Length: 477
Image (cartoon, rainbow, N blue to C red):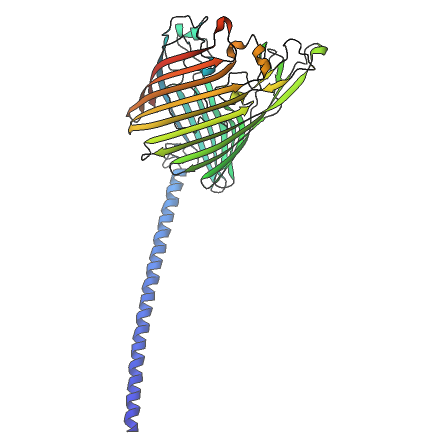
């Protein structure tokens, strides 16, 4: 009996060992299969990486010179530099329905008064022009993933200063530099630097999605371009920017306006301190919001005058603004709003007359060099607009804007400059833009604008109104 039990025990042990061996062998085969699959995936990834490196090397060596580093660009053979040339040719026509306004853009602070030399002229002036056609050159060179890239950008149009009588012979206009700047860095890493002429960080006109048929700056907004050094850094969906920008002081007195290097008005306006600008911009899914700020120093002196009449004065001006837009109805509708406020905001706001960053009482009766003051002009402005796409290639843009200005009491005594001292301004426009093919826009627009003077001008004129109908044909390349 003991012998039989011993035999059965040995047989059971043998069977158990056989099962364990089979399980171990099966596990080994599975592990081997997984290892082979992993090696295959690694080899595939290696081959893809080599193909990508080969393609990049081929592009760098000039094998594929038409493929640039950014959309629509062309690579310069044998280099890492890519460039893009683009822009548009635009012709537009306008007809004034009110007082004759011999200008191809409506500048609300200086539209003709309702009577006087311009106001009594036959309404309905008509003109056609193409000087706002635009040419852009964008050149970029990647440096490294950490540093980012180096960029040069140039933008010109043909809206420089020109004698309007040139239209009698050749309709020639001077080329105007809109932007010319260098840029380098990585905005998502250590930051991005822009140096040159570009849009001010305080500008809100570049943020608002509204389109116009003409080239006018939307009333109640800022669209200032000037020389600057700006730094920007992104933190996710939020971007912070700060800049030192060109200063250009302007002071108006009863004798007129003083600008840098000018002896008009009350003396020489100095520019010894750069303007400081900052912006905080958040972009989300279908919306954005921006807070903007600007600080400037406005100075004036008349050291060239006789000793008893010499003085040197300055004041601090600033501006604050908020801008936002919201996309609705599957991005067919965009609602936009912007507000601006500032004592001394001056040239940063389009609805402030040129020269009214500050005013001085120097030149008024009983005001001496010792009692003369310089004071900022406070402006408050805002715009509400909408953009709606009836079809993917048919849109309308509509807006209403208003502004008010507050001056020291002594400004009511100004005489020479009284016709440019506005108390309030407003404007509205509506247009229809049709894009029959992606490169062509056809548009028609109606604009109405008005300004009211602080003090009635000669003949009791209290302001002026402009009504204009205009159209355009724009061809992009």
